[in-house]
Image (cartoon, rainbow, N blue to C red):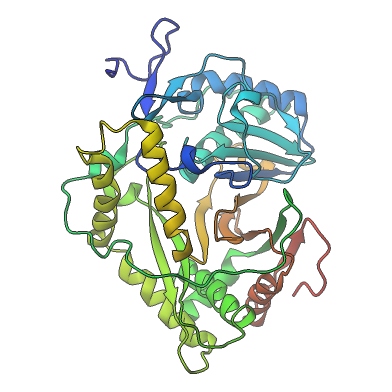
Amino acid sequence: MKTPKNKGSISKNHPAWAKLDNTALLFPVIASSEMSSTYRISALLKEEIDGDLLQQAQDILLPQFLPFRMRLKMGIFWYYFEENDRKPPKVTEENSYPGTYINKSRNNHYMFRVTYYKKRINLEVFHALTDGYGGLLFLKELVYQYLRLSHPDELSGEKDRLSPGVTLDMEDSYLKSFKSAKSHDEAYRGGKAVIIKGEKLPKGEMKLIHGCFRLDDIKTVAKKYGVTINQFLVSVFVYSIYVEYLKGAPSARPINCCVPVDLRSFYGSSTVKNFFAMTMASFRPEDREYTFNDVLKIVSESLKSQMTKDNLDTILSYNVSNEQNVFLRPIPLFIKNIAIRSVYYATADKATSTMTNIGDVKFREPYDKYVDRIYAMLALSKGQDIKGTIVCCNGIFTVNFTSKLADVSIQKRFFRIMASEGIDVMIETNEYMEDNT
């Protein structure tokens, strides 16, 4: 298969196609109704959503947004994307738990879905398509287009097209940034981690807990400890697991919290495909009692030491070198899938959980006045029955926990620690939860 010269062009005779990026290769192999490999980003507006207008907004936007107008195809040796010319997927009012599996055959073979509930617009994306950067780009343009339809008088000067400066770069930045198969023995070395177990919710259900607080408050606390906001919040999460799940006891296994890092700023990329690396906040309690300050120091130093270009080069090299292996290329896809799935399940017990920071989301004028805040959440994966997501918008930080565990003591401890630091936290949940602070 050869790449068309006009890759990304819109042509019925020669539809655009693209290879999956290095990270995306995993998701079609492991995705199922039990492990959907999706994420959600939601925009909470200051007004009720009109479903018909939201459908119109999506239908206007999609022809301009080729990266989301792709379908997944299976080749002889690899999966690939091909331009999808089917009718846009239907926008519906939310009627199920978030992050459920996107059945492509029931979604006109699109790998995303848009739903709404009261004032909230939800975008759910199959992770093979793009990471949080690409998802946010699409959601923001969807919100802009929706507001142009719902406020035609106020926004009469705005045009039904993408915002100025938006580029839809579909390069594989992993391959572009890969220089050589340098030594990467330490990239993902490590043994088994603490796995949080317990009574699970009924199949298909998910517990959601959001904690909202002011950006200025968390900035003050992080500055007091001499760490970044991300380091502080990940440390609070790790300490909450130590206190509530391990009960402050020693452990032969470490608490390993995956912390994804957006690589675009490190490598000068603006790709809308996946482009991130996974760092690990690690803490192994030995035969003594640890205070929060102890854990904060260990976790923050662990993260800081990994946030170097050299270390990220090593991780990137490790990931891409496997794909570049000339001996693997001619192996049929069904055999590759067996190998990829086996490696994934064999290494899934190296991580306790994941906490990802989507960043500070800003909507451009004149649309920003219609947006209240942003939510984001991750679907769960093997061995990780609780995950956290961090996002900020309009000076409001939101920490979102998704979990399939009946016990919420870890989440409660997390927000109690925040409150003990003088941070005023507002809790939202999809179920009743006693003692919210």
